[in-house]
Image (cartoon, rainbow, N blue to C red; front, side, top):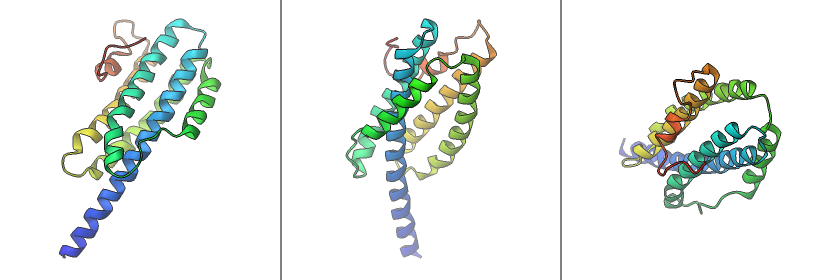
Length: 170
């Protein structure tokens, strides 16, 4: 019985390590997507919002970096993921905003569910980190939802800004 628990603990630690590396590289990718979109976006108000989303991805990446290194990964940003993100960002930069927000919302709904399930992978003491990763994804989802609602009384970036460690740079 104790052996099974030790094996389960090892599997959880291994899964946690893989998960935080995947999330780290996912943030690398997301940061590159939003950066490239903002660079090429022809609508200044949208470009500003994309810069704030880029900042959230960057800050979340940096929060993950120490955990990534603790589990034995180098914490180095994948050039391939950056290139892939920049390519997608270039494709999406001037997509019709409502269509972009609809597709973003659909994708984020799935991600939030996946991230919530993955929170159980956290070893003791790492639960807040994984909850933050999920919260950042929820904030992006809420942003897209608010953008689609078009409610001028509510700042669509409010849930994103609430998670930022520093004031928005956009």
